[in-house]
Figure 1 (cartoon, helix red, strand yellow):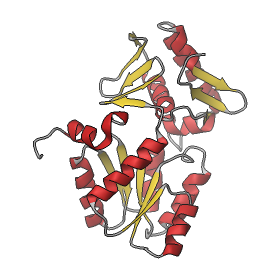
Figure 2 (cartoon, rainbow, N blue to C red):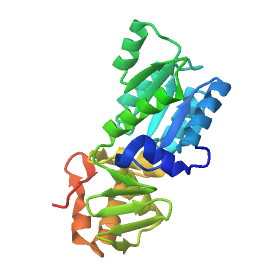
Figure 3 (tube, one colour):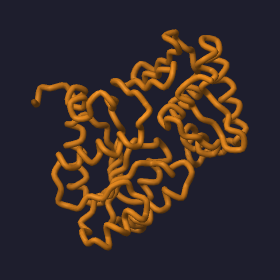
Length: 253
């Protein structure tokens, strides 16, 4: 088992529906626990980062949106419960998958955690097998319409390979500048969800960038033009939702 490649172990765990290398943020102030979870997840084929408090977690989430957050309740300065509520109230993190890992095992605590908007609640101590099973369920539920294989994501006729930094539409390569590549990645990763301009701004340029929302429109236009040069169907997948923002539809209109 130790010699099995990470991608194959991940395929066995997740099946064909979810085969990319998910990025997991572990928010845990006890370094030994955080490192143990990280080692086990990396061994299972995940990419992981650790945040030791709520401020560091905020910076990491808005620097690069995780596929899933493992969140401890008892954190310094701001509790994991408060942090979960804050993320659920913000447009760019409203749909962020969150699993709470905590020693607080009372029913009232579990209810409070779920009411705060977390997707699942696991009490310590827990087994790696249980954690992986819960993560698998949340990831599949959150990203049901995205086909992921290796480092690539395919929605409709558009495919993006993050490792190769390559985009194709109907099998033909699309030339994208770095910002348009990031923009398309953000749209693809959110499946069929509508993303506000502010959300895209934070996901692509960072939470503390000083660009205005008009800049997002300009780069969406450039993205469409690049896709149109190769495939009109692919360009049509980038939808403008009037008064709301943008969405990457699964099928061209």
